[in-house]
Length: 469
View 1 (cartoon, one colour):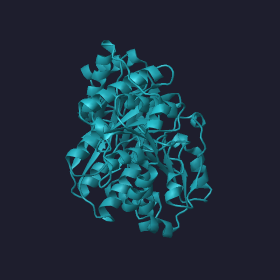
View 2 (cartoon, helix red, strand yellow):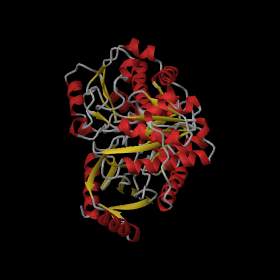
View 3 (tube, rainbow, N blue to C red):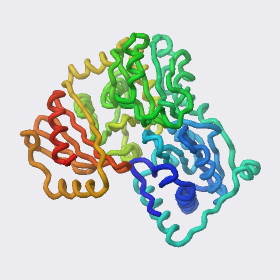
View 4 (cartoon, rainbow, N blue to C red):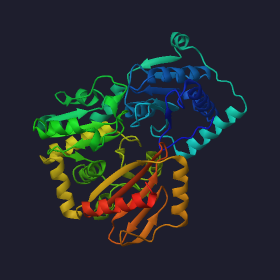
């Protein structure tokens, strides 16, 4: 069995790749790693989302942890990834495991590892885990476990609610009273996921849709992007609400709909919150973004004299920098955003509340806040399209772009490139195009940002031609 950790954890199709047998091998390797590193005696936090079989998969991991003499605190029901990550940090556990496939389609499940600092496992850690899985498989390593009910009776598995400690942290970070007094009419779409109920519990009176349990996620991936938030958008267009917030399947990613009922992307969210942290909260530090994230972040960092880092896609790369440097905020195009003074982790719930705080402080809607910033630094348009691509075609495209990268696209000279994760072509005026094969799905992702929507669409048409899609 070959197990590869992608941008955040190991994921696979349930019953094809993500099976109890394969999960058991990965869990055994994880316990071997924790015991080898002297972390096993600090215990393990385990949580799970609302996907098909997630509770059963989580219990299986717990059985294997106890079989390897590692005590477990298991969430008593589904929980958001940020709450589980905070519990790892708060309790001083050796690590955490979250059973989730995040925003992936319903047929997927996954295994995320959270290190003792409360963030995604670093690339160096996941590389070691891959090696242990391979070694164990080649050498017939036996999976050691204790039946779930026996472990619970012995007290080796303790059920707990991670929300209490997490809520306490959130209430320290965000002025919930200020938001409540502002009377913002807000509605949340947790997309049938593990974030269900969390924001309304922190802010009574906030409405929520799609909160029932539905492992098929209403027939679409629980990813908070425009095409998946049509019902939320329709509610805003009726004028009943002033803002809509959306969370992905495990609530570590954020999306929004503005006061006009228009999708408010992670790029817009990153821009508004970054300015809010600097100007209202008077916070300082460097900024981190991934290669597919808006140039507005670059310009804001330059405006306020903040150092800027750019990383490959995957919050684990941002997390690594947050551990090494004084980072004010880090984020990625997919809606994963993290902030200073919390854990080095994506947190859709916290970021959604920060959006409400920015509205409460200013008395303005999200689009108003963004337009004020763009009036200052320039107006930008962004689009991403996904095309299915099989592995052979993916490898051929990578080889082609590595050997013969285009020198100009749509008549514009390529002034710079960044091939750290995919193939990013940057033009003289700052516009850019990124061609990137997904690390977790048979998908080719094409991204562009430019000063006009027409230019964005022309770049993307050229990308489709280059990729032969």
